[in-house]
Length: 269
Length: 269
Image 1 (tube, rainbow over the protein chains, first blue to last red):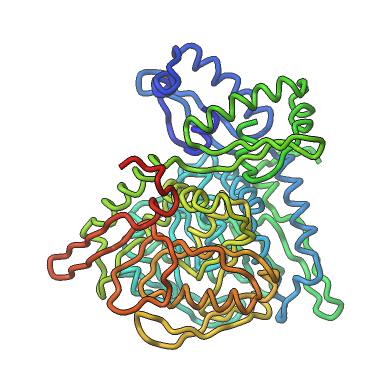
Image 2 (cartoon, rainbow over the protein chains, first blue to last red):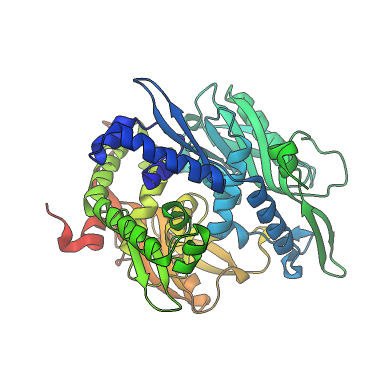
């Protein structure tokens, strides 16, 4: 049952389904689910929600405990400070981390936990490096993800495009999204790997408006120090890259505002 | 325990770890794992491998049963034949399917099952649409994935690039991969969403040679009928798009060679 629920997060499974599948009485299924619920709660793995009544059942909502989240963010802070991550222009190399399944699983669970009380219809990101994060969050929220592209591709069909100002380079650029990929009125969570000036995220905000959809929140893996005014102020970052010093090849990273935003007072610091 | 193993596929977990975690005797952990193993086997969820001895433990290897694989491929065949997927130029719209977490989970499990007996160090794909497939396979194999790009990005650091002939358009193009992303000697599995002439996959093959790595196999979500000689002949496709008729807006899709290649005689047809 654990495995079945785990493969279908946020999906309501009727108790009668389990009763038939395992050829057991509903009462013993209920009892077993009680054990699963307590284990999940004790380990901070997630919430097992029970909806009573004929149309009811049980639903698994994956989460992460504040302690595990804190440990993971500390771990990432250390990894990001590795000096060989420094790239010309003050960029930080992240592709190895965002290609590791265990890192992505954690990132997905962290971001999904933050929005656990909100209803979300789709996760949005921009190609290419935001895709692994969007996909991982989408797995844990069990909603589709959509990929905004900077280049038009024939395999997308008709698209809607917007212009946006890339904050760090002050250039006007274009991004577009396949017309059929986002139904009107969708509640959208925007995620990305890295945020400097916020121009890209702002572009996605405009796109969401064009689709008459609604922005629920913005969470990025890492934000970097930015000289100037950010065009986005309401966002969450797991990590904050404070300073990149090309001369002595050092990178200073600290936890972003994620822990505060996701857990608030729950954290004992 | 199910959940713990499930989150760490292909990872050896010592029995003493579970004994400590659940404060139980190793013998009762062994017994419980026996139940988990039989359930996994009966449901075709995966293999629970036990390695005896002091350095031993238990390892979860996710797989899919031939029957579930067949059902899923049939389902996808029907979905791909939906007439509104037809795009100008004979292309087929796939982005909605490859943005659905449940579809991606199945695709990942299918491809991981095919290579379950091989040792694989990394999954490779080309940006952007192969990424979700690569990530999903990487989750089930628990190895990193690397993304080859057609455009150079400053956030990748030094890259190695190769030229390749795009089979369908006969143009020479360039693709590149960050130098640090693939260690020499890696055993690489190539995946992609769609294959026409095989030029892109061939480009990835050249890249793998440049990195002095080894190609283990090629699996694509869908192959399409191609007028001419394919530059790649040894590959697996989950689905085969036989004919796209723009006049009456029909698409003919059939299962690809996946079932035959992954399960051979195991399938009772």
